[in-house]
Image (cartoon, rainbow over all chains, first blue to last red; front, side, top):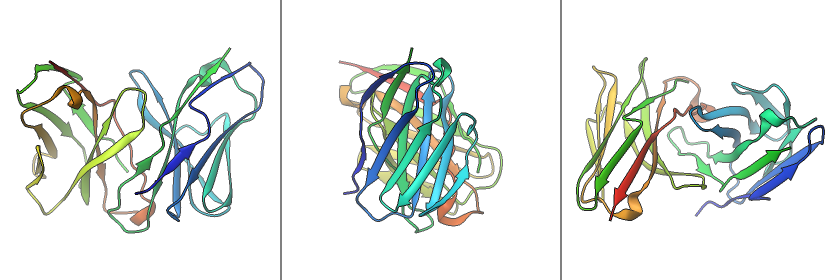
Length: 113
Length: 114
C-alpha cells in the first residue's frame, strides 16, 4: 500500500511567519501534488512536481513555493503566512501509469493567526 | 484537465437505503475517477471507469458513465453509517499522460443515518 505522510496534522502559525509543510511518500512515485481545501471551494491545486527538482504551478500558486530535492519528499512553503492561507492542505502522489489514481496524505490543517 | 461537478451537494439517507450521486463534466475524457473523503482526512480512490466503459462494479459500488451526456453516477447500495463521507469525481482528459492534473469539485456530502 502507498503511504503518503504529512508531517503535521495541525499547525498554528502567526502572520508573516515562514511555514514549511512536508510530504513524504514511500512508493517511488514521480508525480506529487499539493492541494488546499476550503469549505464551498473544494480542492484547489497549488503546485505539482513530475520529477526531482521539477515543478509546475497549479491553479492558485500565489503566495506559495515548493521544493522537490529528493524524489520521496515534496515541500510546500509559505514564504510569509497570511490569514487567508488558513486551510486544510493535502498532499498527493501518483505513479506513471496513465490511469493510476492519486494517493493522498491525511492532510495538515493550518491556522494562521 | 477539467473539473467535475457533483450533484447533489448534500444527501441524507437512512441506513440500508441506496445513495446515488451524479457528476457532470464539459469536454471529452479518457477516464473518470471517484474518490471518498472521510471528515478531516485525505481522499481515497474508490473506482475508475474508462471512457469506453458504460458500467463498473466494485463491492457495493456501481458506477455508470454516459459520454453522450457527459455524466457519471455513483450508486452505493445498502448504505451503512460508515459510508458517511464526501464523494468527489475527477474526470481526466485525453491529454497530459501520467502527469495529468486531477481537478476536484466541491463534492457530495453523504450522511447515512443509523
